[in-house]
Image (cartoon, rainbow, N blue to C red; front, side):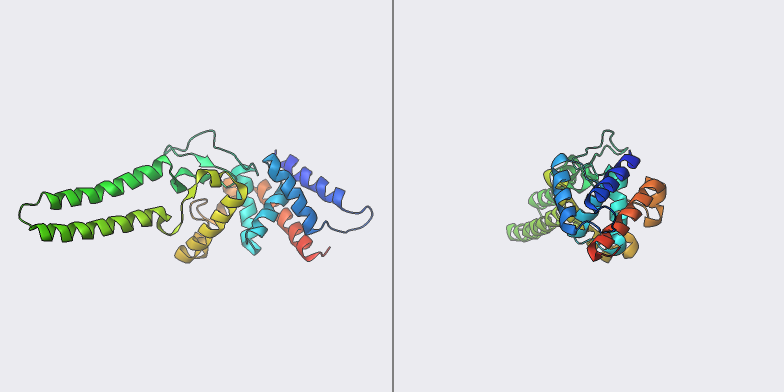
Length: 233
């Protein structure tokens, strides 16, 4: 599977290269190839690199991102995990984003319902409190309702990492933009090692998690892609 993917983009590079020269394809040619592959639902490593670059990935982030996408979905845009995770969740799309990060999923709805119920119980307790005056009840209930609203807003923002809807999760461009945004938030929150939190235990374990062949493909792809950007042979 991975060898076929690698062969596909190498063939593309050779087709775009003038015979007998070392001229690289232009970024515009890569963009055209990306749009073609986007319509088929399967991105080659070079198109993955282009998508990530277009979304703001640079340097190590670009290499690591390509490696992760290859490891998670091998470039299949609308991939939905065939087997559920042990906790009952499903992973979706190019990045295999988990249900726990998807707005409106069963897990999101459950968390929201639990949050609402927690505050509603407190409100009902104040309503049934016979020792409090109506004014005291009104004041306390208003305060609890404000706290409830803040907690729901906090939940809807993913506690700093915004939730994403399922249609956007299954879309290559939107899901990649989401990952970039999430990555920057996690980097600020947990430092450099936390940027991929939720995908891999640590970046050093990528070869173990996804295999060294995908690491080599990601490395070769990004090296060539950077040459294309600089137009240096």
